[in-house]
Amino acid sequence: MAEKKRRNKGEFAVVVVCIIVGYLLAAQLRSVQLTGAADATNASRLETLQELYNEQSKQNDALEDQVTQLQSEIELYRDQAASGDGGSEALRQEVEQLEIAAGRTDVEGPGVSVVLQDSSQGNVTGDEADYLIHDSDLLSVVNELRSAGAEAISLNGERLVAGSEIRCTGAVVTVNGRRYAAPYVIFAIGDPDTLYSALTMRNGVVDVLSQWGISVNVTASDLLLIPKYSGTVEYQYAHTVTPESQEEGE
Image (tube, rainbow, N blue to C red; front, side, top):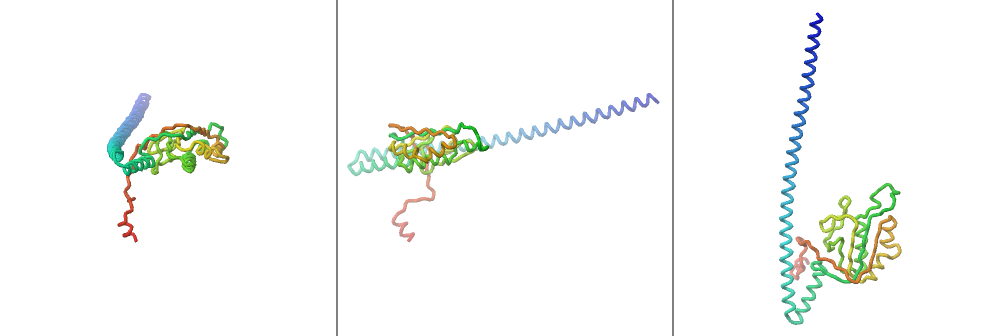
């Protein structure tokens, strides 16, 4: 009888061990299946991202070729205008002014540089975002400079044109499709005294930002270099008004 009980206990122990081993094998198999599925998903995502990257690279290359071609055409028109009579010289000057206004050429001249740094003072509001530079802060500086007569403006080396965007994307700011973090450096060409006074006047943009501990250093300069806009501008809906189109609209 005692021997039979020991045998039953032994068989029971074997059954328990088999159950545990089976559970562990099942769990291991499940883990392998999940890992395999995750690897397959990651591989699919990587393939999709690679395709998107390749497509974007092709688009960028095509746009760069288009910019190069347009610049060559502009240079040809400029040479033709310079070799002509007085009327052609006036046309050449007009082309130069349009290039500057459109941001299609490097420019230099006097103006001011503005360097903005995130606040370093202690957080007393509980919201860390209150002490960081946002797109609205940069837009306030840029708009003040434009109102004061700035003829060309750049932000972290990006030429600002009519279609340029300045917007927050997480903890950084996107300008002309590129992401930048603080410090932010703004160059503005124009009358240095007027630009400097516009930013540093009492209760002006510098005063407002300093209330949050944001550092804004404005420096007048005799010579600043602002690069040309490196992107392309395409108009799909806006067209030049002609006498014929005016008659049709009446």
